[in-house]
Amino acid sequence: MTSALSILNSVFGLPSFRGAQEEIVTHVAGGGDCLVLMPTGGGKSLCYQLPSLMRKGCGIVVSPLIALMHDQVAGLREAGVKAEYLNSTQSYEESCGVEARLLSGDLDLLYVAPERLLTPRCLELLARARLALFAIDEAHCVSQWGHDFRPEYIELSQLAERFPEVPRIALTATADALTRTEIVNRLKLAGARRFVASFDRPNIRYEIVEKNNARAQLLAFLAQRHAGDAGIVYCLSRAGVEETAAALVERGFDALPYHAGMDAAARAHHQDRFINEDGVVIVATIAFGMGIDKPDVRFVAHLDLPKSIEAYYQETGRAGRDGKPADAWMTYGLADIVKQRRMIDESVAVDDFKRVSIGKLDALLGLCETPGCRRARLLEYFGETSPPGNCGNCDNCLNPPVVWDGTILAQKALSCVYRTGQRFGAGYVIDVLTGRSSERMKQFGHDRLPVFGVGKERNDKQWRTVMRQLVALGHLLPDSEAFGALKLTASARGVLKGETSVMLREETAQKTVRRRRGKDAKRSSGPLAGAGLGRTPANDGLLGALRAWRSGVARAQGVPAYVVFHDATLEAIAASRPDTDAELRAVSGIGERKLERYGDALLKLVRTAGG
Image (cartoon, rainbow, N blue to C red; front, side, top):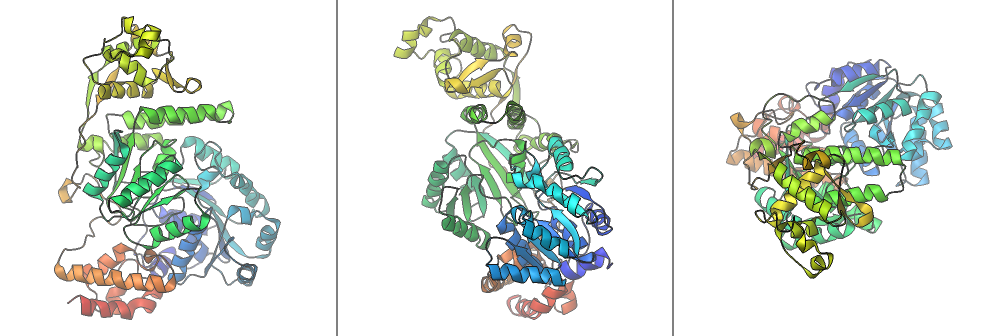
């Protein structure tokens, strides 16, 4: 077998491996099975692409989304790899041509959707071909407890039975302990090695703010930090997507909606624009994003609470794949908690699934309400201990909230919920607490209760913050059968009796926190940290020329710009200004095929645009 490092350098133009990549590649190339957990942008693809090139035969990649297949195949072809895919976008003749290349040994990698792979025709085809390995990407889709469950993934256990001699590698960026166990059991990987990289994405800044006119908060966030940047905004409802996209367009942002209720052609067009153009903002439901390989997404914003930490981590992980600074920003409030609990309670799922879903929601609420480091809480959920001290790149570490003893306020709130019959939502309870009478309240006689007006020292916004935290702490529970009425839980008794204290976080004023630079950075900003571009007029002019050239090449080939070259490669060229083929070949991201194909054009640009 050709050495992994030589292929890494000659084909992909990369000088060295990162983390456990080399160990994984060596293990799989040697015929071993494994489960790989590695964060988005950590280099998972190389863990199966390289062994496929090292072993005899074709590597079969099970990939759930057509967009991801197309991007990865386009990138591999650019690097000189014989790669193809089989999916529903191809004609019968095109599919037959790919199948013939597989059987003749003319392919290094073949991407197939799980539904296609499991058809008798495809399984018979694979049985006649020489196979290097099976790579099961997005392996968390096998988990019935997860946020991206796909029933067809369970049937992938057939690969172990039908092709016992072919090594299998399952990969995901998102899996808690429960999901990992399910992946191993359902894919029959009990004897496989496990490689678990750090889940930390140090270049992403996590920020969660109290919801107070979410759309206006979003507009302020984007105007202050991300004007002209590419990003994703997630909303829970289709109506929210359409309205938010329209509001962004009105404010001058190049924003597009994306949700399952749209025409398929319109969805595809909006996704293509996001992938291929700079500065486009997609406003979407969770129907968008999985398999999107765009490296320069500078922010992911949530206007509504996701379902779990896994969903939050997966969605925010689409930001900053290039290792450069990116933001994960979210607004959330009491209504979000009520809505998510109602969705769980009203679902037709079995009780065990509901119980797990509630546990996942509670863990997410813990992340939202923690006064400590968000990064540490996030990593803890995935079983990872974060380095001690301030992470330097989350809102709580950059602008620490005040924590205070809110037991007296909690007792007032819980007592009010109890005395009004546990039949009303937060708004009504707050009206009673603040002494705001109404005809409805007089009808029930609640304006004569001892708790009426007992909380006048706090305004509505402050009481809503208290209510939200009491729900997050598990002392109050929204009743889905009573339209979000708040009910006491068993733990509320201890609070009311003074046996349990309640510590609350005080909402900090929202501030624009400056980006970390140089010595201010507490941690590395990812694999490209320290390779920054020297800011000179000549370099700026050259970089602009390189980007314009790349855009033209990408348009001519019908591929995203980052498939031709990542920004980091162009920036390295602008910084080093190579003058020979050898100097250009030394730039990370330029392998032998790309040097042969683009070398002359790049060197000419350096000499002319570089001054």
